Length: 399
Ligand SMILES: Cc1ncc(COP(=O)(O)O)c(C=O)c1O
Image (cartoon, rainbow, N blue to C red; front, side, top):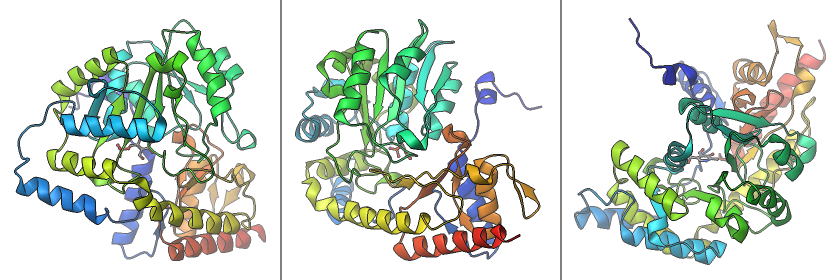
């Protein structure tokens, strides 16, 4: 007899992994599928970072590290936060974790009690919602649309806050929309937050460097909310180190101590070799790794021009991250190839099964009208994927 906890029963599987597993199954059967499902850079880890990991092995960095990470790494994170974001953090405010995902979970575990509300501007990254539910919190969604670049306003935020609101959790740059909040927009949100000192802002900045036309702004830059902000960042997206599992949080001291307490009982310090290599990554001039951003910027143009040609798509022009989140509501309610399209997940499944292109439907991102395309793959794959979708959708228009 299955004895699931209430915690597990409340949660869902990550839709991103559901779709990427389905792609894998189809590929295993010999079907030629192009996957635009996963959000990870397709580049190799840069050589100097790899070399630092080899050195760490040879230098026998094989024992447990301090729970919040090696002091040298926390110092490197503090220097990075000063260099790139003009933020002042001491090493004891930083907790290095097994990816930014764990950093977010550490913070949520530290502050959420049963019934506490967490505001999630929709669309949001899939795991936010499930993490909040897992912890007994209540996700409260704030709707946005493609017309407002999927961003919330200070008025919307203010209207959503209740005495039970414990946190605001968002990513900027945003997965899945590819939008980012400008300094003025963040300032207006900060003004609302500062009036509610019980609220912690969890500011997920993992796509900081993939910002094509502006300078990244962190919520923690506003002194009125510095003490209420947990900055989340990590190595996965900026250095193509998704599998190395290093992320970090920078928090007010009380919250950093709570994160350390939780992590100490869950996983201990993160992988030591990856931590040593992360020091080198953070201390290298970010310009050295700019080639990845240049490639993403080029692919964004390519995909934007091809997506615009696809019938029935309303396309956003993302200013950051590496995703498109077009509105496909034109197709909702229609029956195509014998399948009724009730929401974006049905549509994503249709594209997979009929056009052999893997995308992720927006339902688990909190938007049932849009689908997410990751363009972290080769130009050749992107061009072919867009051709397949266009051809398929043009064909069904004629029925
Ligand atoms: C918005 C956002 N935050 C956090 C993460 C998790 O990053 P990490 O690999 O460091 O756990 C992801 C990964 O897709 C993400 O898109």
